Length: 92
Image 1 (cartoon, helix red, strand yellow):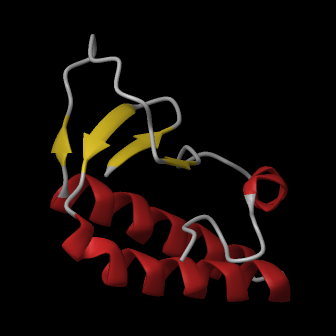
Image 2 (image 1 turned 90 degrees about the vertical axis):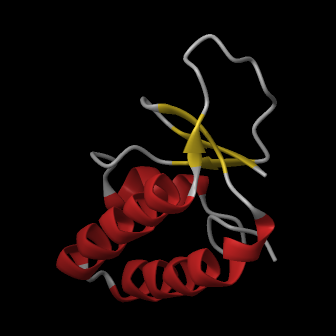
């Protein structure tokens, strides 16, 4: 799977890491629904760190279609809320 972190670039991520990322996404969604800004910031950072740690960065000139687009680490709670689907940032 190709994941884009807005403002950073793309990462190739093996599907076997989907469960770990989905758990973080569920936590992020719960924090957003409760308005927990501190928890939201912490979990968004953990989600993006996991993508960076588990994936392999693609070269800056790579033009792969992204299957998943994640917000930048600086994104506000409201900006991320606008990106959300019914299932969070990560579908499935």
